[in-house]
Amino acid sequence: MARRVKFILSLFLILLGALAIRAFCLQVVMNDEIISHASNRVDCTVKLSAHRGVILDRRGESLAISIAVDSVAANPYLIKNPYFEASRISKILGVDKKLLVDRLKSKKYFVWLKRYVTPSETAALKALHIKGIGFYKESKRFYPEGASMANVLGIVGMDGYGLEGLELFYNNILRGASKQIVAQRDGLGRIIYARGLSQDFPRDGFDLHLTIDRRVQYIASTVLRNAIQRDNARSGFVIVTNPSTGDIYAMASCPSFDPNRRLYRNLVGHKNIAVVDAFEPGSIIKPFIVSWGLDHSIFEPSDIRFCENGKLSFHHITIHDHEKYGWLSVKDIVRYSSNIGMVKLVESIGVHDLYKCIKAFGLGATTGIDFPGEARGIVREPGRWTDIDMANIAFGQGVAFTGIQLITAFNAMVNGGVIVKPHLIDAITDTKGHIIHKYKPSIIRMVISPKASEEIINIMRSVVEDGGTGEAAKMNGYHVFGKTGTAQKIDPITGTYSHSAYLTTFLGGLLDRNAKPIITMLVCIDEPHPYYYASQVTCPVFKEIAGKCVNVMNVSPTIKIAQKE
Image 1 (cartoon, rainbow, N blue to C red):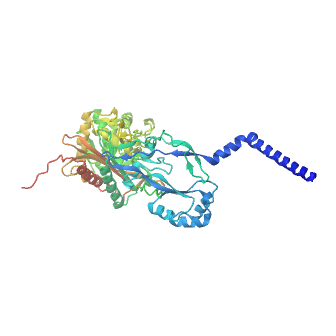
Image 2: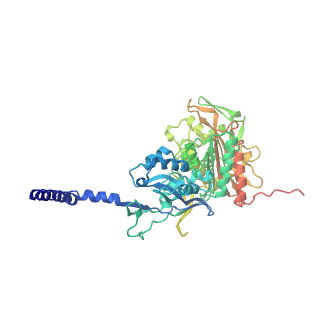
């Protein structure tokens, strides 16, 4: 009996010693590891997201808003039959069954099943009463204008960060400041706030007020899309601006995409072509060169040049005009878009002045527009130019510019001679409507004199008169001015200029009653077929867009049309 008591006592002492050793290890030797493990099981970091700011047009119409939608998540530890539940959930959410099984078998306490579900999906899933499934309110970006504004606004990713366009460029302003706090989980993995929510709430994002007019943007986008389809073109863009302030009323690209569907089938459709792509401008470069020559008294509008009856042999190459022109004045060289006439004018200007002209207008350099990915363009140093290079530049070959560079330079040429920085943002306001920042016109530099500016406008008015290359852009009741351009593209296979692929442009505007430009527009269509001349393709697009814009913008006619008795 005594032996049995001793055995039990010894066994008890051994167990007690083992427990003491284990307690010592847990509390002393493995103290940090145990605390860390416990914290990982109990503590969690919760991010309190700020509300993303709204994007509005110049009239206060919403272009991008955030709406609260449900997202579905699960605690895999509470899912008893992952295969069975995954099958039921898959039928409702349209998510791959195998993917759901993998997530429901996860060793995590929290997994997303689907973000941004529809109300009908939420109702159907709740009706299943699956233990361990939770619904969480998230903020989803919605774009009322759809594809019309997509290339300008861009999109927001699942994490609430801007991925493209203005959403990316102004992400920090729109997103606000989120806040992270440490919370705890209960035994079921649910988040609890032991000390309540902090009073230091996230700062909601600021609102952006654009210079864009939603109505003008819709008109430009719709007319452009129809033209692309009608002319079997590859792509195109339209920019509509205020030449005096740099305000951009519309900036439409085609192809585009629906930002509400988040489809990436055509990555080209996500580009804002007017800002990120550079191209050879063709004949729309001619007024810039002429205005420079007029301003520096190199020639006068009435000076004449012989245009060789449409064919000029020049340093082992032949330069052609589309018509057999003889003697033309400087004004008519622009009006009829004579390549040969421009080559002879450029000879009068010289290499270094021609280079100064291009650089002074800001061509081949970024404009600083508030948009990501702006391209610089291509302008080689003048020391590398040959006589043939000079001739090519005279009619827009051998250099490459972006659409935003061209419209900015054009505005400088017609607004009295000053370059005004283009911009898409008019103001930034907080959630209470208080103005945080107001944008004002930013004058970069003087390029030409007001006198030269007035002269080049008069010359470009002749372009849209009867017989001019831009006659198809003429509008009843309004004074129109502009310049056409039909540029051959480089064949990527041969490396020479193609005879079937063209980039067609029209750069023009409208004058008010005081003969001052009130609206300017650049229309560019890439590879139209079978017709490719600007008079056939881009001039009608300009006329249609301008004709609709003057109505919505209340631009009064400048020409009184006689009425029959």
